[in-house]
Length: 264
Image 1 (cartoon, rainbow, N blue to C red):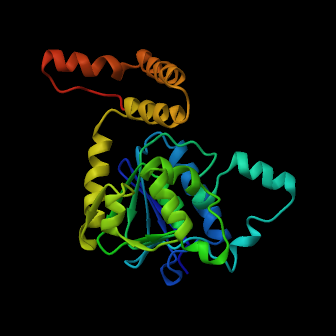
Image 2: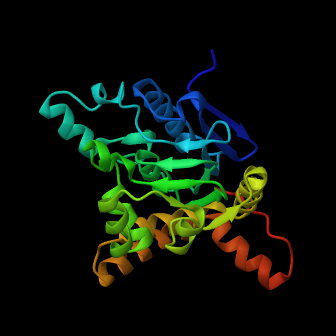
C-alpha cells in the first residue's frame, strides 16, 4: 500500500502530495503526521527552495478533514490543546506554528473544500485547474475553521468576501475563486502540473535570500502599525547585508554580466 503522503525532491523543487485519492484526499491523523514530517524536511533542507502541495489524482486537492478519524487528533487535555494552538503545526502540517519562509505553491487539481481551503490559503501562490471547486462546506456539520480560515481568507480576499463564503458555506467554481482573489491563475487540468513546475522552476532560479526575507517581512508585518512593519522590513532586509548574494546582484548588473549567486 502506498503511503498517504508522497514527497520527493526534484532539483530544488520539493513536491508534497496528499495521497488518498479514493477518499478525495481528505486528511486523517496518520496523513497529518506524515505531512508534518514532509513540511519539516522541506523547511530544514537548505537545498530545497520551493515547495508544491497538491493532491493525488484529478478529482481532489483536499476535501478537508476525515471526520471519521480526525476528531481524535484534536481531542486531548486542555494543556495539550493550548500547546497545539500556539505550537502547531496545524491542519495539513503547516497551517500554524511552523513558520516556513520559503515559497509555497498550491497546485489545486480538484475540489478544495473545508480544511483543504485552509491548506491552500497557507500557501503563497494558488494555481488551480479549471474544474476545481471551493467552499467552506464544514459549515453543514458544525465544524469551525480552526486552522487559518478565519484569519487568512479575509487577508486574501477581503473581509466581505471571506465572511460571505464562511457564513454561507457556498460552493463556488474556479472563475469565482479567481474573481475574489483566492487563486492567482486558472489552467486546464492537463496543464496544471506543467504550469506549476514552470513557475516554481523560475522562482528557483532567483537568488533565494531576498525572496525569503521579503516573504517573512510581509507575513510578520500583517496586522502591525505601519511604523512597526517598516522596522520589521528593515531589520530583515539588513540580514542580507552580510551575504555574498546581496552584493553580487548589483555588481553583475553594473558590470553587465551574469551573476554568480550562492543561492543561500
